[in-house]
Length: 209
Image 1 (cartoon, rainbow, N blue to C red):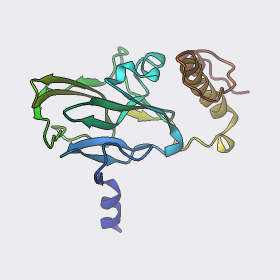
Image 2 (image 1 turned 180 degrees about the horizontal axis):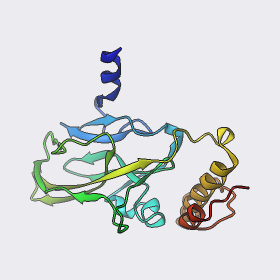
Image 3 (image 1 turned 120 degrees about the horizontal axis):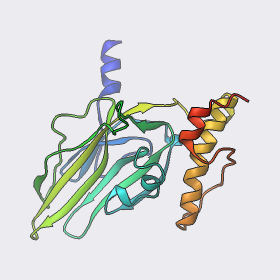
């Protein structure tokens, strides 16, 4: 049983792929292969889009970066792209002053041929990569900097029919806000009903009805 538990916690190698399965987070990158780890249910990961950097993703500006995570990487002689997704089940933790528990790691210079990116120190279970900066250094190398954040879980599933009334309202606020931003940016999504426009206001009001 212990061996089984340990196996479940270990990262998963997605061979010959630059991206993780939906709902997984990028753990590291080995010779153009994405090394992935369990993160959230696939139904809680939405609007996965390739961007030059995740701060360009729709969810980043909508939620001040607190729901954006990296799920893939494309690094070769022609492209430098990051697969950015929005999480409906987690958010970045903040300290008592409201500052996000995120840090930009030291920049690494890596080869374009068989590139590998390792997080040092290794990502903790409650950490994920929120963004990646990549800048070419000549034709054969790329300077890579990753941003790592500590997060907290809000829910273990995104099945609205299994939520309490309180959770449904909270979930619809998050989903509706994201869908509205996506529609304004030309991304087709299903509009969710909302009764409160601001997620933080909702959390403070404790709507129980």
